[in-house]
Image (cartoon, rainbow, N blue to C red; front, side, top):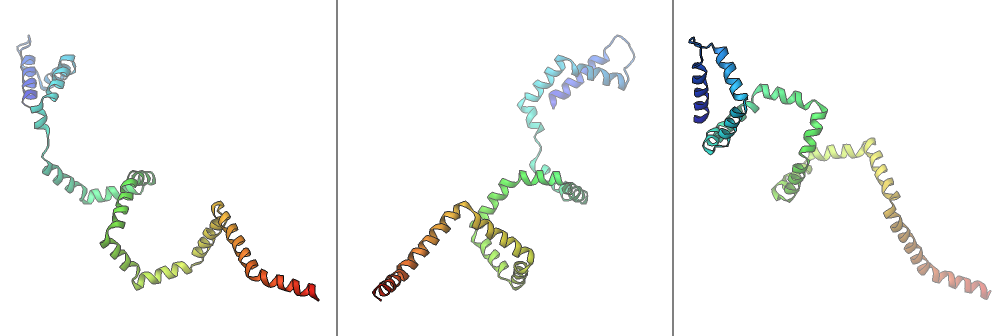
Length: 193
């Protein structure tokens, strides 16, 4: 900051030492300063100044000050209205949801391992009001249709088709073994007659 101020002061003094004896106006000084900063030497001086560690230290803002300012801004009534309006835009909501998906998954995994959270969840679902709501939901026609759809999709699943077929064959084989002996005896008795 010190170097930057020194640079601006020297440019101002140089501008003041022009051939005319009258002092330049504010607008003339401003124009000269802007012109000087737009030259290659001016840009180089600014780059050098920004790379200086002492200058960078002066630019670092106190974290407490930043925290306080963010809290005041984010928790104000104006900010609340702003966020409400912003989240009504479906594109923004979708983008925000996608950006936080990984963090939400990680959070849910951590919560499912937390015994205190699981106890709270269990007590919530075992409450009388929640049981009534769940019963009401499960008995609704929409839910029944959804369950029927899921069952049909499960039965139609190619991975389960082979399992169903194997179960049917095993059931048929066990019937033949238990009932097959009596059928053989019956056929022998008919032959004897």
